[in-house]
Every structure is written in structure tokens, then in C-alpha cells.
Length: 441
Image 1: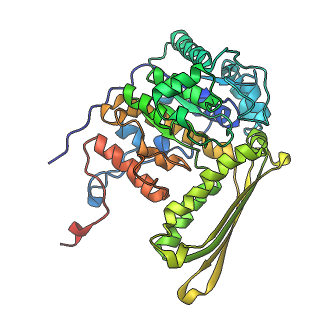
Image 2: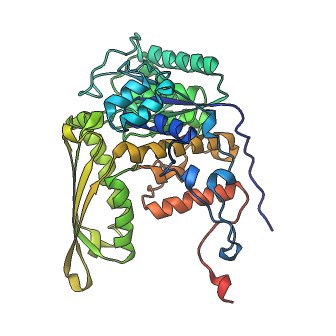
Image 3: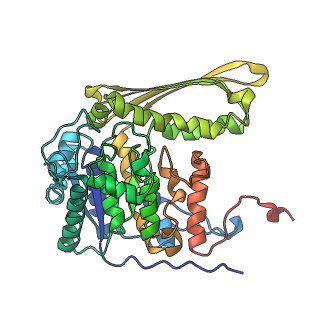
């Protein structure tokens, strides 16, 4: 007997996309969406636009496009707004980022110049290697949050959007651990009014979004919605949240290779990773505090996938090192090198070496699109919205959020199965287990 479909409101009207941080990732995303809308390019890398989902038995041969299976917002309905410490419109920012070819950007100039950043919430203490003048000057951090709320309401009214999603595409903030101010919503709001030095700009944006019932995604490794105070607000207002840190280049490959080592029970003695990159991201990560935040995000992946407590003979004492080096000539075209010292049958040593020449923002842009559309879907599905954390979107993050009592799932293939099974569950379809016994009776 077929399962009942869960309630999902239709995606009626325009969907506003709010982006703190209009740098390389954000402008590549916005320009890419417009290029796809005009038929100038394909949305390669986007699960929502090009991915399929198997339904029923393998013999049924039903594999519709995901965008035809669940009621997602149309690309034509996306409207953009954002904040940045630099006053450049999206066209100027995209040209300076140097990700997309000028010939393509010039075709999109009439659209991109209309997206001008609002003054940003910025505190140099949290991003030491950036300095811009397009910033807010509120007396307290609560004043700044109220200014962001006013920005959002003004955009909502001027653009006529019916729904909103916020996704952080800003810089990596300096490393921060939870403290008393992050433990309850009341303590957090007192901290905003008292200008607590432990509340960074990313939390101010998140607070503003959650107060207004706007879903929030964190694309950086910052401590943001993964705090008791902001999760309390998300649950109170039934707002979907997810994060953190877009899973793009080197870590994407780790979440593919580490499950393979574990599946075949091959041992690991060491994994050394290093990167060179330029652009604003590389400049920010050249600061030790910001690098520490990124390092924590990248280092956690192997521990959770390999589970050395379960396989001590294979993974207990492996050495794992991550380096990121700022190299301006490379721009957004990051290069990562990995050296793996592994061992197999009878302990005999082997090596794997990887040289990944990737384009960081090209890999990140389709993730931004998918997260915007899936978070909007979650907001329209009461069964998902009331849960707050959207663990089914772990597929997109280096440090995926999950319930405090759980360990995060990092295996890319388990993450993808979880995502697709969530969509099947929403639409009343059987979940896929891949058991397959019924074909051999």
C-alpha cells in the first residue's frame, strides 16, 4: 500500500535569496543562475537541476528528475540581495573575483549591476585580513541585528518576494568556541545588547533571519547556528537551518576516498593535505585565527568516517595534517595535493597521491543553488521545518550539523542516500535500501 504524501505548500510567488558576503562564490552563483535562465549555460553540478531519483523497484525503471519529483522553486522565481563590506555591485565584484570569463559576464552585466550590496555587519577582530568601508555603524550588536532585519523587510517589500532564504557566503571568521552567551536565547539577546565580544557578524545575520522565520544555511566553518541559543530560536519559530562549510574540493575527495578505504579495510598510516589558493578566501585564511576555523572543519572528516575506535588496528594512530597557503597568482583556481600512506594485506605499504586542480567557486555555486531550493522546500514542509536542523542536507557540507546526541555523517554516499530517501519520504514513496532479495525468489 502506498504511503501518504506529506504536506508541502506550493512554491507560489518569488523567492528572495539573501546573501551575506557578495564575493567570488556569491557572484558566481548569481551570474550562473542568470546564465542558465538565459540559456547560455548548463547548471552542471546541481542536483536539483540535473539529478534524478530512483523510485520503486529497479524493475519499475522510474527515475524522474528531482526538480520534477518535488515542488521546488523555479530558477525564474529567484531574486537576489546581499551585504558586503565592499560597495561593488555584483558585476564589478564578479570581474574582480576573476572566476568567470569577462565575455560571459558582459552578457549578464545588465542583470548583475542591479544587485548592489547593502552595508555589511563587520568586525575586524573576526576577519583580520579584510577591511572595507561599506559597513553598518550601530551602537550595539542588537542595533546591528535590527538594521539587518530592516534591510530584509525593505527588500521584501521592494522586490515583492513571497518567501526568503538566507545563505552565508561570507569569509571564514576567526576560531570561536561556544561560551555562556551562546547557551540560551535569553543570554544571546543580552549579549547582543551588551556588545558581547563573543558574538561575531555571522551570528547577527543568522539571528535576524531566524527572528523573521527565514531558513538559514551556513557556507563557512564559522560557529553560527550550531549553538544552543540560535537552535532554540530556530525551534521556537520552526525555521530550517543547516551547515556548515561548503564541501567542494579537497574535502569532497576525502569523503569519497576514506569510505573506500574503510569499505575494503585498508589501513591508513598518514594523510597529508596541502592547498594553494588566492582570491579573497585565500587572503582571509592567511590569518591564523581564520585558518584554525577552517582547519577544524577539514580535520574532522576522517575521524568520523574511519571510526578508529571500531578499527584500532587500521586507523588508531594515523597522522593527519592539513595546510592552506595563500598564493595570489592562483586566484580562485585552487590546487590541492594529498599524499596517503596506506597499508594492505599483511601490513604491506602502498601510497595514493592526488593533485586536484579545481575551481573553488565553480564547485561551490551549484551547492548554493541546491541549498537555497531545498531549504525553501523544507520551509514549506511542516514535517521538516519543525525539526530545525536539516541533517538530510549534510551532503553539501564539510562539518554537517546534526542533533547534539549524534555524530555527524561524512560519507558522501550515505549522505546522498539520506537526502534522496528524505525526498522519497516527503512524496510517499518507498525508501530505497538496495537489499534486492525480492528479485531472486
